[in-house]
Image (cartoon, rainbow, N blue to C red; front, side, top):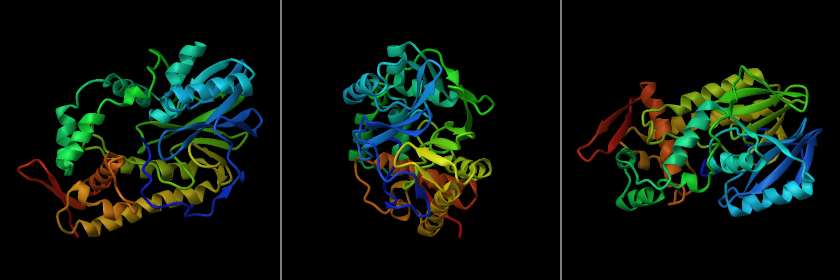
Length: 354
């Protein structure tokens, strides 16, 4: 799953202001601004919910993000269609990024209503690749990646068992789509939504900004109380997503007004985006500083969790923690602040240059 709740943050570390003192019940939709509804869908893991957004369109409703593809999510959607939307048609489906809680039901919704999908290109293509892995054995590249990180045999067995599970909770996407891209605003129901792209949490994450209503649908790029997972994966083991994450957050500070109403995928809508962006940047900078000290002696990726996470790393979040640890280590490698040695077993040992 896309988020790692191990940084021990249960309150904002900056002065944000929540717009509402409540959250809708699962399956309940409430009005945020004219023509925009806030809907919560269930998730079968720690987060418990995802916020999705219904935008009044010229002919029906556009959906932004879709929930994980399970029977209970589909049942919830069917109730929303009949009870909340009074069987009004769905006009199109927009997806901020590829993770299953966002893209999971996109294909099902597009098929059900015979409508088009809007999604960033890198997100669409990678999502289709990951779905195509369903039922395949774990590749040698993946086994090599986690062995290099320091996985024990039981951890490796769990990775092999879990591989290919993405497509079990993501419906097959349509064979064609419309690209969400910064150069092309999206017009929905007479409102213009500017696409603002972020990197780090996913390859080409799309946020949607409506300047007239001063509203930002932020997806997972900006969340009020937790930091989105920024990970390296076996498909690109030398990636540097944390650099993209920092660049994206700094850039968003130049594009958004501080009083914008942020509509996050998890948690409640809030204002005070500048302070929140600063806090997200600072959180990772603090992690890097701890890592510099922690790796004064050689460490494997799985050894550095105490420097980055406050909560216990368990079987359920080990791969997310490993991916995020490697993202921070790779950042130091690219900055020339660390070196790496690979032993005869293929395990990688990192050491900082203090």
